[in-house]
Image 1: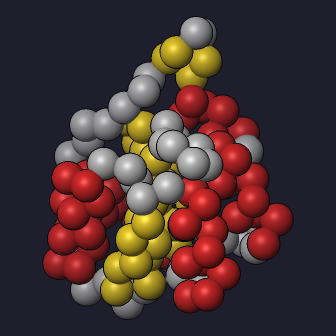
Image 2 (image 1 turned 90 degrees about the horizontal axis):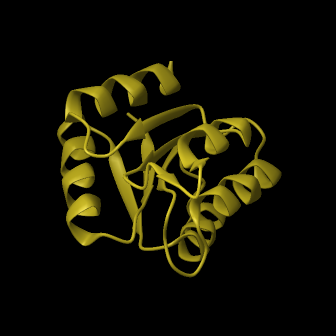
Image 3 (image 1 turned 90 degrees about the vertical axis):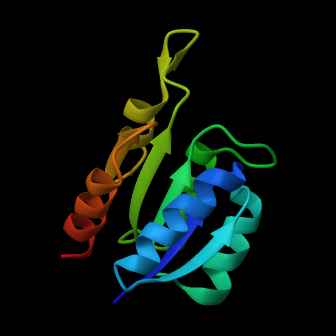
Length: 121
């Protein structure tokens, strides 16, 4: 199975997603913001990254851009409950910067599992 890095500032979201990925047989690494996530990525080289968009320290779009610089082939799933803010659709912006898939919070765990499976195949 895969090593998956989950980056989200909300503890409940991190724990829920972590449990779901572990239930699927994956190894999970956790970070609370993009800055810490990038450090973990550099040290652990996970197969897939799941990242929130709106976070302190380093937000998701910037994190995606930096991940792409480190590894242009890395699969990234972006998640966000932010929706539209000031007419900006963060999920669409994330796709344009290289997210492989995007899910709007809240989403069914089955949708995440499908997106992870699609990204890893």
